[in-house]
Amino acid sequence: MPVSRFCAVFVACWLLLFDTSATLAQPTGSMAGDMYHEAYYLLDHLNRGLPPLDPPVNLRSPQATLETFVLASREADYARAGRALNLNLLPAERQRERVAALAEKLRYVLDQEVSIDWDALPDRPDGQVDLPAAAPDALVGVPRRSFRIATLQINDRPIPVRLQRVKTGEAAPVWVFSTNTVENIDGLYIEHGPNLLERHMPAWAMRSSLGKLRVWELLSLLVLGAISMTVGWLLQKLLRRLLRRAHWRWSEGLSRYIPTPLGLTVGFALFYNLNLIVLNLQGPVIGYVNPVLLLLTIAALTWLGMRTVTYLTHYLSQPYVDQTDNWEDKNARRVLTYITVAQRVLVFLALLVGIGIALSQFDLYRTLGVSLLASAGVISVIFAVAAQPVLSNLVCGLQIALTQPVQIGDSVLFEGNWGFLEEIHHTYVVIHTWDMRRVMVPLTYFLQKPFENWSIKDSHMMKPIYLQVDYRLDVKRLRDKFEELLRDSELWDEATPPIVQVTGVGDETMEVRALCSARNPADAWNLHCDLREALMAYVRELDGGRYLPRRRVELARMDNAGQQAAPRATRRRQSAAASRETAHTLPEEAGPDGDEGD
Image 1 (cartoon, rainbow, N blue to C red):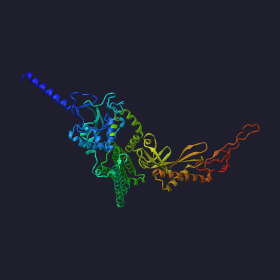
Image 2: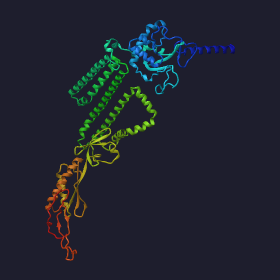
Image 3: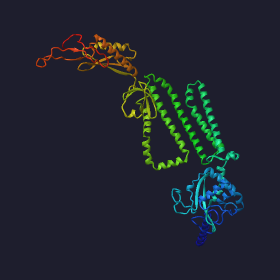
Image 4: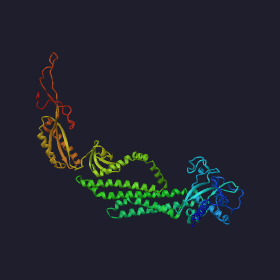
């Protein structure tokens, strides 16, 4: 084939293909010639099979068209409401018989699925908007020939509901529902229309009673809710009774933790599924019911998971709780600490998972999440500041579980408060003090500030006893008495021998320290209090109390010239204020030995 003929055939095929593509790309309805107008679609005819109306309907703007359709539908004049539809895809002879049915179906779908924002609907013939916020996808000052009202779904396929501005011949342009919208009315009605139960409802039950919530829908929701909650309540009662009658060790705790959240979960889940299967409610108002039921179901399921974790950890920790009374069992305290911290972490994670599942069910929050990621820098700072106390304490809980500076049952002294570590929570610990108080201390305290742990290695403890006595006391006699008192006491663990030492001297007394030891801090405290009382009683009764603390005073004689003379005598007088530990006061009198000088 010559090159020139081949080129001619190629050009002819290209022109034919271009003409076919251009024809397919034209708007619905035949075009008036080859003319194109950016402000409207040019049609040869519009709804040729429908007779003229007197008076004609107002279709001059998007708001006027939708208002005409809604008002005529409320009056059940669907033949008039159907004038807002572009029926050009239907044969002319079928348009008259189908217009009312299509208008009624479209009215039902819009009434149930679309919340019309009348302020966003342009009320100008050219469809222009004055503010970009009213229609962000439109250009201000540019005529529009198409306006999207909503987007609905048919088998997960998006179907836009649009108004289009069309012009036929010399008539003024009008706004009508597009042919694509009209073509999908039947499919939208099947997807979003009334179910079998609704089709058989009487007329009185179809009236609205609460916004767009009809009487039969309200009654059906109440009945289904009552049935679902009754089933959940009966399940809870039955499960709790069966578990309490069982004689297994695990059944008692299970009856306390599981039945209530399980009953709520079953009740909400049953209510949610019955609503979808039996009622299949639609509409903007009813659209809040299904999300709320879904959220309640997820919340109840999350609670069930948290209670299950709590029950399992309590069941596993109970044997070790019984052993914490024995202060020598360090392994029990260590395992109990592991279990307690693990419980707090797992409960926190279950809560986070529940919140994540709830948020993932809604497109709004997914969109919000994407928007937040766009400003990740600011959000990171805000989140770090807001969540710092919670996260830091949670991390401290894990660190305490791993390094174990404190354990459940440890005897600790912090800021003058002595007690036992009773519980470890997500962000704080509970210390049961000796005077029956509960002190809440943040977890970060035990990692940032010094404190005393009296049982971190073992519970053995030594306590000192300090006495202030006169210099003339024979310390050996006091030491023998202390040893005798120790051997007679059941609290002494015999791990440390009796020790009595002179640890200091003052102007008038000497300080004697006695050391005693016991199996745990509580016994050590009681032991050293008992021994201090016994030792002070011994010193007080020894030789009539002559070894109690005394105050020495030197008397000087004045001569006739007012000058101080040499001291003639130095007398000992008993101190008016005895030792603070004895609170014993002797009357003022000369020393028992009658000495006039030291």
